[in-house]
Amino acid sequence: MKRQPLAWRYRLLLALLAGLAAAAASHGRWLGAVDEAIFDHYLARWSYPADPSLLIVAIDEASLKQIGPWPWPRSVHARLLDRLTRAGSKRVLLDLPLSEPDRHPGADAALAAAIARNGQVVLPVLAVPARDGRLAEERLPIARMTANAAALGHAEVHVDADGVARGIFLHAGIGSAHWPALGVALADLPERMKGLPVRQQHAAPFQWVGDDYVRLRYAGPQGVPQLSYVEVLEGRVAPSLLHGRRVLVGPAAPAIAPGLRPPGAGGSVISATGFQAHVASMLLQSRTLQVMAGTWQDGISALVVALCVLGVCGGRTATVAGVMVGLVLPLLLALGLLRSGNLWWAPAAAWVVALACITAVAAWSIAGWRRRAGLDALTGLGNRQRFDHTLQQEREAGLRARRPLTVVLIEVQRGMGHPLRPGHRADEQVLVAVARLVAAHARRPRDAAVRLGDDALAMILPDTAPGGARQVAEDLIGDVRRLASAATDPAASKVTLSIGGFCRVPDPELSAQAFVAGADAALHRVKATGGDGYQLDAG
Image (cartoon, rainbow, N blue to C red):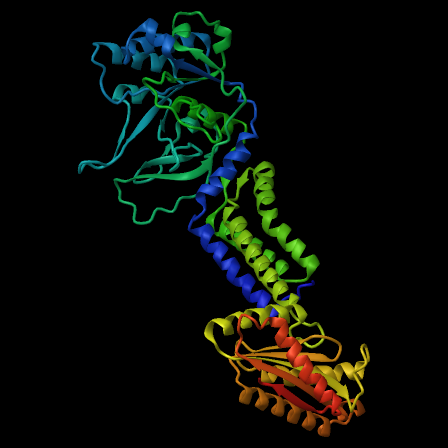
């Protein structure tokens, strides 16, 4: 059964409301968990080879076993750094805590001197959050190391609420975002890298703030190459493997380096140093994943849902197009922007709101189909199926309440003894006009007016005593006579009704078919006397 499309004004109104709902969901990040699941799924299947200039020198379990418990004297790091300097490493990131003096005499001076000899060392700035009444602070390496460093970078890693490290603020700091991330400082690109601006409302001058947020595209499947710290320290690695490399030195053993979970990695983790290596690789190969600005996010979500609603509220072809727009376009658009433009648009708001709209329209359509399935196409009255169902239902209700039930059968004729002609346009117009009058007399919510055949109509009148049934029959015959007298069409001017009714208080012995049979018998008695009248069997 074909569903009629909504009028354009209603479609536009619904599209506007649905679009606003999608924009609100997008703006409020109500479906952020769904967005992150989609992002993780897309990213897990989209890797690239790490930049070949990068190398991690990891403080791993083997190094801890051979060198000793952590922390080591900084003179050990000085020896490692000198080995990297002699090998001709291009740039070195020492991802180590260096903000407090070493307890070993001369160790800080040794490392500071090694940093100066290298000339291309990046050191971390640690973010210490505010707590116990103390303000947040930046902890820089001790002064002699800071003075010799080529660059400083913040070591803060942005971890989402679900514990997954999906992005990073390329710049951050206390009061303003003035420190580049360690990976940015290691990459040492000539231009400042830009990301999504982060609006800081009422930021205190001593509050840690981040800016230029980007999503991280992880290198894979092997990731960034890694060597053991102790092997490099003891000269077991060929200098050619270190020459011209950007080297990241940092903890990797779980005991001293809490792991970070990449998107879609299951239970696997990477170290904070490894995370910065992926940041540098992404920047060096221009694979930064930008995040779409909030206004565009919300606007596109609203537009997609509005187009979906305009479609699903239209005709059959438009409905198919609307379903495709709502269910497929958000996911394809997000994937296309990510893969072709390195731009992340969060699709969940558009996808879920569109799905809700499609479900609502489908439920409304099914309800309409069910409703129309019980109607006669010509007259709009109920059909035989509706008649049988309603009669059985009202018989049972009358049986429980011990209240009377009346069934009325009506035959429409073109004058005495001339039945209506099926398919004849003039006669069908007469039938429709009479059907309107019959429906007008089924005034109460439980009253039913139906069409049983070519010229046969019927009424089911619950809780109707004989007096009320007679009044309905007389009024209906009077209305039809007035219709005939006012008609200019010959067919309508001769229309008459023959009505038979059956009224009883239902009992277990009196079936629904008994009511029909009783009304039919009364109808035949009327027709036997020439028609154009009524009879009621009231027992």
